[in-house]
Figure 1 (tube, rainbow, N blue to C red):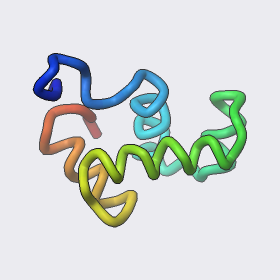
Figure 2: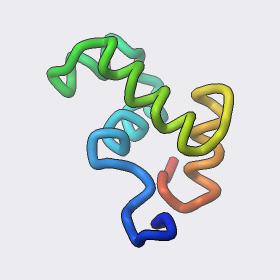
Figure 3: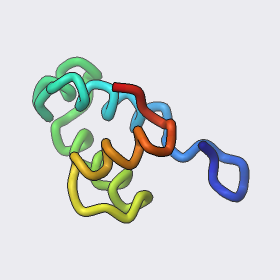
Length: 72
């Protein structure tokens, strides 16, 4: 899925974070696996939630799946 300007909805890093999130990984697990800080993981999740206008991680996952951005 792309926005009106033809850019992908998620950055590569946001996609990586959410792909790990749906595998039941914790923020800490994701940070270690991607070699980034836990704060950065939370920032990516927060950015995606803002883009999708949802209020939680699980809502974001549901919306990303619905949009075809994420497979479970």
